[in-house]
Length: 556
Image 1 (cartoon, rainbow, N blue to C red):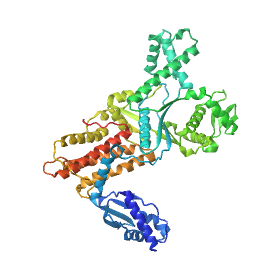
Image 2: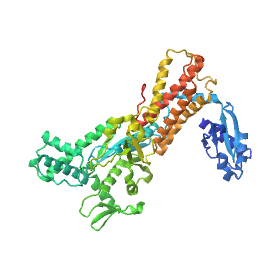
Image 3: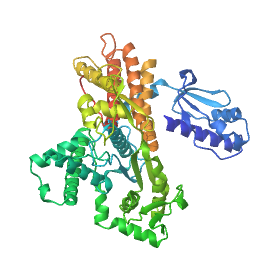
Image 4: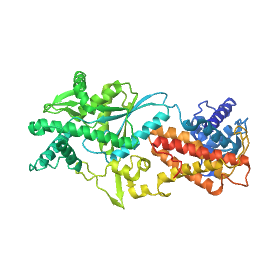
């Protein structure tokens, strides 16, 4: 309906210009919004105020010129009025909203799909947690955000690839190996002063015990450095296997698992450094090598090779992101923890140095989760071992509740996750509130099989059947869904889908409270219309939940 109205307004404005009423032919694309108050119509535009400066006219005069030239051959409009300083309010014929029901019935699972991405190739890299410990709930929020973003972009016509970057090289992996080796030595009866900067969690002891019990390696005969290296590889691989399983249980699947170590094995890091030395982007100072990021928008230059000859994480990150664009991605989206905010400018500088537009690289920063149990916060530190794992949360509340709640607020806002609330089967639980509507409608559809409905019902007939205010509100809500999906994809904000689903569920409850679908004293035609209406509600809830990676149960 917005597209039809926008075209009507544009034609009217050009007609007014041809008549000489509007001096300029600079007619902008009309913006249309749903007024907050229903008394102000179905849609409203401020185009008259937007055009005032170029037309050199009072907004109300411009609005009058547009309204006087509106052509409505199909009788879409009941009335049009000018309000305030120059708003134009449009009141649509109620039967028009019934077209929404027909459209959803025809499109089914594809309702909400668009082609705004036009096949643009996009990579979404998310989670990418170091394989030094199990995933915690913070990783879970990032996983839900990244997965939902990828689903949204796919729904809007982008060609999407999901990637996990495995940080399997460097100091943290060696620390993991040392931690495991020392715990192994303890099991052998050696007295160990366990360093505070090693990983303290019980999972390290479990890894060491597996090495001993299953006799996986003869560590006792190895030099300590070799034993630490073996433990590092074993522990990292074992933890990564656990991460993959946790993500699978959380319904998150990556298309590519990319190893940081591979960038060193195939000399990608060294080749990148040599390339940028030749271009003058890398220079030497104080025995170290520095990348000129300040010239490209960063607050200062950054070290890529320390004075001891070891490369920094930034060096491998440069090579990694160069690799991404070399693979042909038009857009690269990284999902990071909020504590990495200071890293964005240097990476944008690196992307610019690679020869790509800085805006082709985007970062989504996800704030931490405050996990509560009985109102008390749970401490979460990977190295200290006092954290609640993602697997524990999913086992306790289920993947549906965890994903929905992780996505229930903008990722840049802190999130309080109440474990007890997530388990409730009441309207207080946001995911239960939405899923229950889907299940309720499935129940209605099942009962309808034994209920008299109109068999020759035709939505193509321009007949006003659904005219109650609650029915119209529900159809308006359904009509907004494609726009919400597009908006969420454009802004990279999956929480918009959660907000929408809760609003749609609320609109259904308001409708169902006052209007039964299956009712003995109503006509078979009205029964069929209402049955189709709630079926489309079920379909849209199913479609929206699918974007979030949440199931749509048929019974609860």
